[in-house]
Image 1 (cartoon, rainbow, N blue to C red):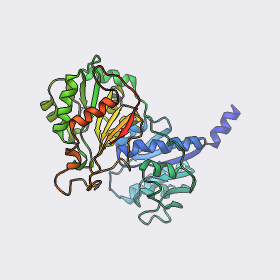
Image 2 (tube, one colour):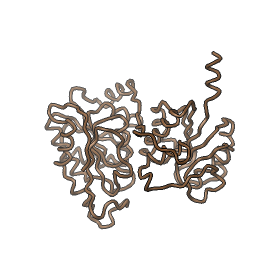
Image 3 (cartoon, rainbow, N blue to C red):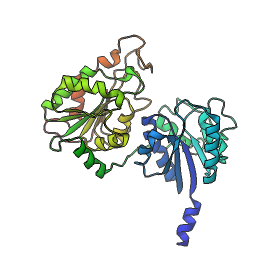
Image 4 (cartoon, helix red, strand yellow):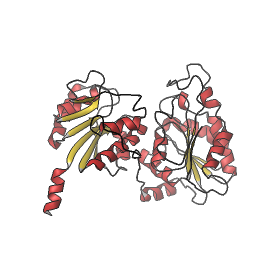
Length: 358
């Protein structure tokens, strides 16, 4: 008992100010794994309220703390009060993942002794362990997150720790019953949305064509997404026919985790749910348009990336500045079907380990 008490006493208390996007929050788990590997620590994450169900699926996180302000809200008074409340926890270090000035205020108000983050938005003083960001040395978002959990100029671990979310079997059984999901046909999840904008969204008719072929091969298709994605899901159902279930807007984020964990594979745009699927080690076809897998790839083995690398790509725009979105339109349903086949998805379905990029 005395030894256990000494171990608990030596655990560092770390507050991580988390990112504002689903995919980035999933990738932040690689940082949490890095911190845990370095020694005993308790990790609290200050993050948007929507992300708490994701944090609950990460065993490295002691608790998620809901940020009471929406994305972009400044409200200095609320940040000061939250900081003073968090001061009672006596964290040893804060790691600030966003690059904004306002994201560094709460750790400063909490008087956390070591406040770590990359240089940006004149945060001198708010951060006292401020690091330059070499984007060429750290091209991937996950590399940047992990680097903040290491001493300055330390080498990144190899291989990088990969996110690994934990599904909930009880909730999975509830979802099957609630949505009357067949258990005798392998399911492939479609994630046709992308919060960033239409320049990251594969055309809905392409999704529908692929869905028809998969249903014909004996699969069922579950469409996942938010309320905003529901009309698009309805369009895929109308065009694709029987065997396709539109669950957009009918599930919570935690439900999407459990549905993906029950699926045999996923087809997705570059989106937050893409990273969720990768963190569940689902065979995955990831479709990129205005963004690039060089920056935010799915962190898994059983992945095929469909990315054309056109001359105009990546533009990182929300809407195609040239008006044609050829980077997505020219990725055919047949090419995505072939990608699924390389992952072992055919009739009958079988799962093998594979990797690839186009």
